[in-house]
Image (cartoon, rainbow, N blue to C red):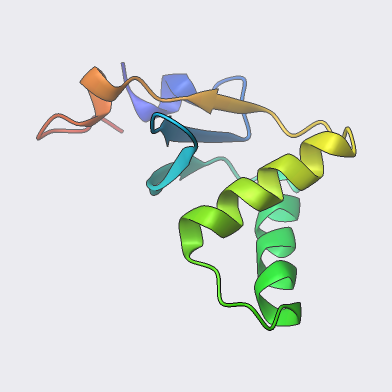
Length: 89
């Protein structure tokens, strides 16, 4: 599977850890929804006195946008395909 195929119907493709999305590998298609996700993350980090790591902010922003039914489309990357030494774009 290649990243292009994963993003065919999604704004963002991300690895899933056992409990949350992993910010270590995220593929982003340039859409209004993916831009909204990153603007939300930026807003959360700039307005908060608490310092969050990137993974916490990614998950908070995803949950925030989903609760507001923004239409953000995510897909989870297959760990077997994307933990390999070679990633096909």
